[in-house]
Every structure is written in C-alpha cells, then in structure tokens.
Image 1 (tube, one colour):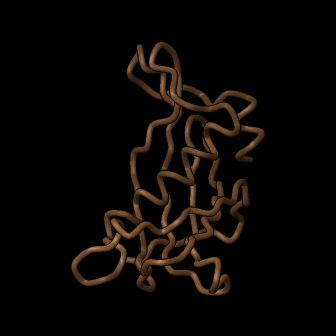
Image 2 (spheres, one colour; image 1 turned 30 degrees about the horizontal axis):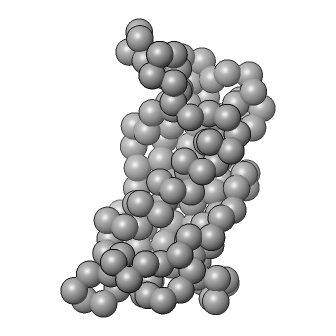
Length: 139
C-alpha cells in the first residue's frame, strides 16, 4: 500500500547518511529494516536540532505510526540524502515525510516514508497541545 504524501508539505531539514557495509543483507542490498533506521536518524536529528527531544519528566514526541515505501534498492557504497518534511499540524500532532535519494543520483527517490508524531505528556500518559515554538515550525 502506498501512502499519499501531501503536496503542501514543508521542508525542514536535510542531511547526508552514509550507507554502511553492514546495512546490506544477503541479497546485496540495504535490508528493509535499515530504511526505517535512516528515517529515524533524519527525524531525530531534526527534533534535536529544533530543541524537541523527549523529556521523560515532562513532554515530548511519540511516534504512533510509521511507514516506508521501498521504491529502488539502495546498495553500498554510497551516501543518502534524507529530506525531512512536516505537514498536517493538529492540536497535538503533526506528520513527517522523508525522501531518501543517493547523493550520486539526486533526482531519483529510492524510498519515502514518514510518521505521525504526537506531542505527549509522559506523566499523564496522554497527548498534549503542541508547544507554540513547535507549532510555528510545523505550520
């Protein structure tokens, strides 16, 4: 199943991730579980960059849904350009979308994925309104 990526998404972060030899499986291409790791790396780097890592004693982001569309095989050696987008801000949530291209083939998307992120009050164990500083970044 292919998920719809909204046209109104907002680019918030870009980074390069090296493909490691150990990312490949017996078939000679990057294992499908590693794509989720690449998406996680891009998402977390953005969250830390903007000052939004989880605070176990307070509030922070929780991923409630994640997906990845595998379009082309990634293989070692090489570097991935991950582009991180946000969209659909709500009271307590927003969606992220990430495209993965090779730096030596920048016009070709090898995978795209994303997640729904819910801002959570960890002590109350329920969603909380997005902080104003974060709403400004995702709107």
